Image 1: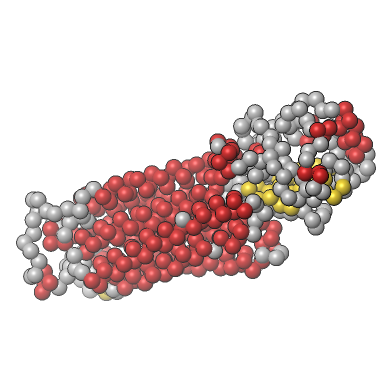
Image 2: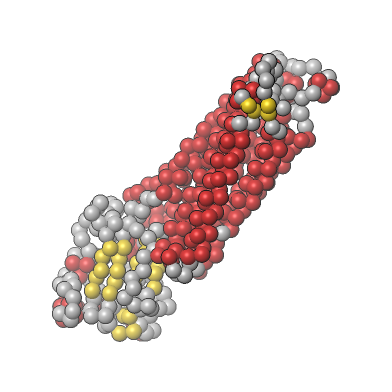
Length: 443
């Protein structure tokens, strides 16, 4: 109905209103809004910080996450104000008649901000998955890439459709807020629209949480790390549970009761949990480089043999600043010999070097580091024995700024003469202003 009022026969069965000491739901909605929106805000800020200052890979998914957070905070603010000032925590018969127009306006704000935030969050997560594909999006994972694009387009279309349906629930629009309009108007059943949109939202929440899992499993990361990242996405199933609970209350509010203010409170509570938990799950995978920098042991040490015949030495970085703008999007080809090429990429994602089909890409957040499967120490295919680093080839510190043993220096000088004017010594492998995280984040 346009005015949100039940039939007169139903109103006749209600108890007498109590405007002085009514029964209230309590501050539960405000507490949940503040708690969950604060957690979502903190994780989103940390996500942006990580992408902007640690990995230097800020992208569209981060922008969408920030916009989703803004609409989520607006939704929580609107529901908190409506509960405190316009009776959303009261029984319908205890809500003063004069509050109903304002209450209906806040309800429209709640529905629109919820829809926008939910859509942006899911599109952000799917765009993040698309970035994980990297160059494979144009080759062997092309179908998955187009599937992700199609899913994002579908989510945007459904979100816009619900927003316009909510805005145009009544024609003219002001009839949506008038209790007893004295002019011609036409309204659709808004309850049916909300329930239908809620059911679709449950399905899309579940698919958004499940779709990234096979993609994460295919990454060239240790099993434990893949399981950890999949576990983070698995938390998104809890979002689906919250969405299902909200759908139930939305159905009951629309078709099971006329006490809409009392049961609508439960809808707002579950919506706050759903939206903010979704934002937290969308931001959590991007925090891995930050956690690695603060607490390296939590995600494992980077010094281990990886089963491909070589090992990574842990580089202790004394300079915690991000790369300069000149190096953030630069690809560096480092020639260690006539056939041994290391391509290091900073600021972009997922590009494979095509010099050798046996290359291995280790994906950490939004960085890749390409390594030839030859032993870079001697230029021969890796063996089990080559997993142990040669002490003759080790620099005194992490980035080659200390003295290098003379035999190692001679070796690289000889290799340099083959075909490519590579580095004269290990000092030239890295610029002074380059990101010191590129190797340390390899796990």
